[in-house]
Image (cartoon, rainbow, N blue to C red):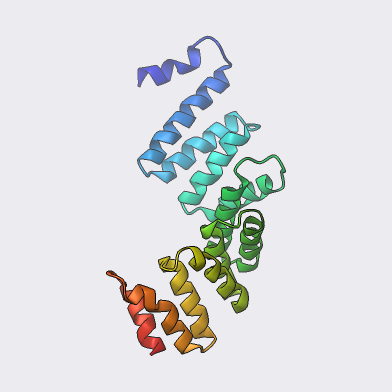
Length: 202
């Protein structure tokens, strides 16, 4: 409203900085509303005004990621990956890996997820992503090991259990797949996918 229109005229800062601050505020509001396309628009304008601000660039890349504009997000993530002082590198690499998977680049995804698991052995999302990538690269042993790492801490982690069972099915180890799926099948809400996988294995 009028307050936003007057923001560029307030004392105590460069007009460009103040205009960028307005764009960032609008982007955050759009994100809270789930309107990631609008958030991308406002963050892009903020980046043009503050091209050296790494925090704004990171927010822009994340907005692109959540808007599923992966091909635009990846170059920014890759640039930040090369910098040793990038904050919250763990989550950046997980998002980069997921973007690679969406762009059908499973080998790049595998490398990104492995970089996370080397330094953050407790990151279940990274192990799950690693397993999904390795199924596509036909590295089934790595995929199964990644799934089992998560399942040791949470035997009923749905996505990981089904990932492990899928690997075992690819290996024609049908009895093993059934045993892996059993904790989900015995639960209150096994889910259609788990039931279908159990049926296929049987």
